[in-house]
Image (tube, rainbow, N blue to C red; front, side, top):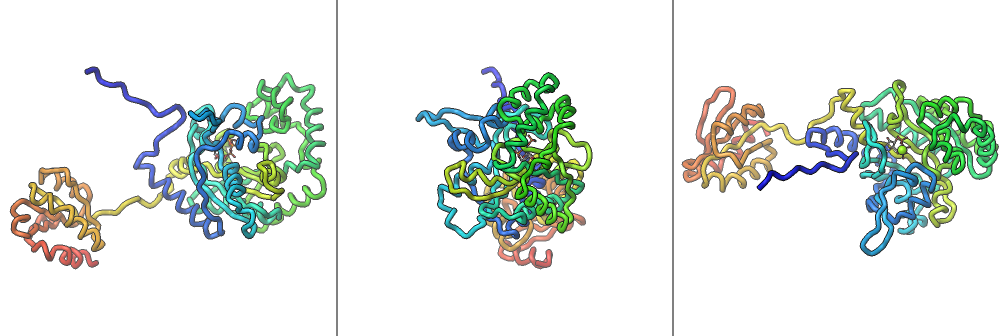
Length: 427
Ligand code: ATP
Ligand code: MG
């Protein structure tokens, strides 16, 4: 039979190999423990949702809805999408499970894979992981500041420094329309200078032109009127107070009037964590903002909320690139259990479990039959002792203990071996 061709992962999707797991574990563990200290509770939602949920929340003219969504028809004819982000699902779950009657704010977090049919490149994948926080039911500025502060603390705790929070306010439904008119006026005679995508945005959602990553558009955008000049008093006060809170926390921030964020549901505060240097279109590690209208857009009553999401793949790759040392996963073995022959092999599993239960860091290679190759592994692992369990020993109820440094061997009674190992390893 001809050799079968191997199969590749779908474009833009990747495996997380065993050697990388320690970085993932480190980032998750550090962030989760901080988040839980701040009283956020975990929620898990399905990986798929009705497509309508995303069209109604992220907005039909967002990058996500226009080109990035993975949607399909089920056998039953339902229109379903792989989730591109976590906020819409969290709010859907909040409403569906009647969490609106719980004491507010309801503070939730999620961790999981997201899917976007993006152009894959370094730091941009079609399946990627996000960790996100949402504070639902509190309009006050301190919420925005707490979320940003927590993002900053998380990066710090995983060992990443040198990030600035780029922050802006995009106003709300009462002051934004005047700004959108001013933007339309501004772009009207520059339409030839912007990219084809922005020409569409000019008609559909002019605000998003500010967010374009094309070089030519970025040049044009430098001259655009800043939204700050158009905020009404309540939005201006909100923004000012968020900044005052941030001043207290000493989180470094940069006012960035071009920051508008890709999704339609944001109001007032929007922010992104970007490195101090070498900013590219893939540099944001945490992005979020306030979304005071999303809950009513999804059928709830008007409820203020704010949140952010962190791109775990990007954070992990920075942790690796910076050479940050992270704890190893698994035990560092001190004893190796080698076995020879059927009778010994049969009893090895139980012996291994007895040693493990007694807190002895033990490794074994049950599949191997040659004592030479097992001793080679024991040497490579750097264990202090190897227990050699052969055919003869298994029948006699004994086992050989070999001290690896000296090669000195002695015979122990099988019934005494756990206690003897505990004594020698000072357990
Ligand atoms: P970007 O501007 O990089 O496209 P976005 O505005 O689409 O990001 P959000 O939807 O707010 O990003 O997602 C929050 C975070 O998730 C981002 O800051 C980033 O770290 C990460 N992220 C977003 N899209 C991807 C992707 N395709 N691959 C890997 N990480 C991503
Ligand atoms: Mg994007």
